[in-house]
Every structure is written in structure tokens, then in C-alpha cells.
Image 1 (cartoon, rainbow, N blue to C red):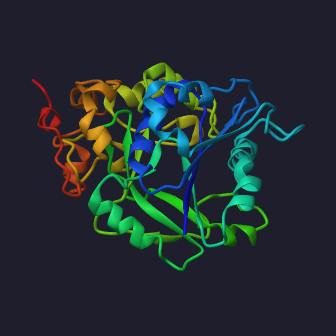
Image 2 (cartoon, rainbow, N blue to C red; image 1 turned 180 degrees about the vertical axis):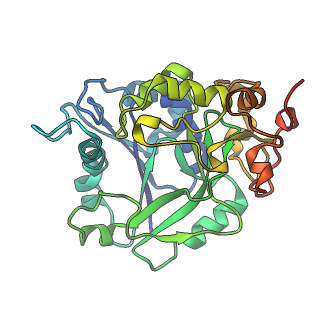
Length: 318
């Protein structure tokens, strides 16, 4: 049995989350397949960047396991309306760029992880590694691993537990008409006592976060929604998309990292990785913007799941 991780790559600012991914998975993933198009999901030109990123000395150790599959032309369906449902067709087609390569190289019982560059399974932790290797013995055609999602920074936690990284057996994918559509379909959920997946979403400077929001499959986001989210540390929900802050887990908290909630690479290099996009006085901002009462939402609803919020943010500053 082999494990292959296929991941989407878009822009140079994703280099740090890619480095974290490689450090977390290298020991037990047999091959990394970076998938890149010169056009974003909306059909706009952005260029190819992954090969250039990988030339940096930081990636030398990992190059023996990395394959880059790129496409120079747009994957947006020709003649179709520019809207979200069609942007997702571009995403599905981007994930499928690896399919001929995978079918020719890997056996039916091998696993293909369908990930984004900021999603990783943490084989660098001995405890997580043992759980992961046992889980990949599952006879199911697909499995998905629960993950912790950090949002806006490498120590800023989204407490929503419904986040998963999907993995599929190559043989099962061969039996499906559109094997790369809706990547979490056909997957059995695995929720071990120790969460084995990590995701570092929007852990970029503010302008790069806007670049992501303005090029990925979901559309109609505004800079105002992003700036509100960074100022009060919550999901950048967009009213014109019908999105509103209506659940405690829409609000994030900066937590104290340890081995239970971080990969070794992130824990060891947090000072260098942090992007500090979140307003340090986000507790005050929540009170002024939303008249929120103390304590913070995840504390009010007992959603911390044992993780310790950084004491600096426990109470509104005076």
C-alpha cells in the first residue's frame, strides 16, 4: 500500500504552508503531486509558480518525492457563465490533472489524498502517525480524517469540528464517472481521539488573503468582509452571499500551541511563520462592533475542546 498526496497550488505566498505540509507528511507519503494551472478557477491568468518556489533551498530535502503537473491553458469551461457553480468545475478539473499519471503508476489498493496545499496529515507526531497508519488499513473505498483548522494565523483556531481531509483508493476512483467531483463524497469519516489533520487557512498577509478570496471558486466576497474578519477575528462572512455571523464557531481564538494541536514544524517555527494579520485587540473590536458580552463565544458555549486560549485574549482589555 502506498500513500500519494495530490494538492492544488496557486500562488507564491503559499510556500510556507507547503513547507509545513512537506515536513508533516514526508516520512510516510510516497509521493506529492503538485497541481497547478496558469489560470485561476475563474479563467483569469495568474501564471505558474510552483517550480520556482521549489527551487529554494528550503525544499531541497523533499524534491525526491515531488512531482509537478501543470497546465498552461485555462480549465474554466469555455462559453459558460462566470458564476460560482462553474468555478467549481474548474476546481474539479484542476484536481483531475493528476488522474492519468496516478492511474498509470499506482495500484488499486493505493491511497490518493485529495488536498489543498494548506491541508496536511501529521505523520511527524508519533502518536498521530500510528493512528494514521492504522487508519489507512481500512477496507473502505474512501476515508476522511478530521482536522483542526487554523484561520488567519498558525495559532488562531477555528473551533468548528466538521472539517475533514479526504483520501480515496485508486481502484475506487476508477469506478466513478467523475472521480474528482466533490472530493469528500464516498468517504467514511474517521474521528480518532487525537485529531490527525491540520489546516492552515488564510495564514497569509492581508493582501494575499484578498487575492485568494478574489480567485477561488466561491465568489462575491468583498474587502470589507475580509477586513471585518481580521479586525474582530471571525470568519469573513459576506452578507451579499447570504452569510451572517450566527454561530459561536464563526469566531476564532488565538490559542497556546502544544503537541496536541500543532505539527512539530509549526510548533518549532511559530515565531517565523506567524503573519500577524489578526488585530491584537480583537476582543475589544468584538465588543465595539457587535456589543458582545464576555467571555468570548467559544467560552460561553464551552467549545474549546480542551485547547487553552492565549491568556492575552481571555478578557477585554481595559
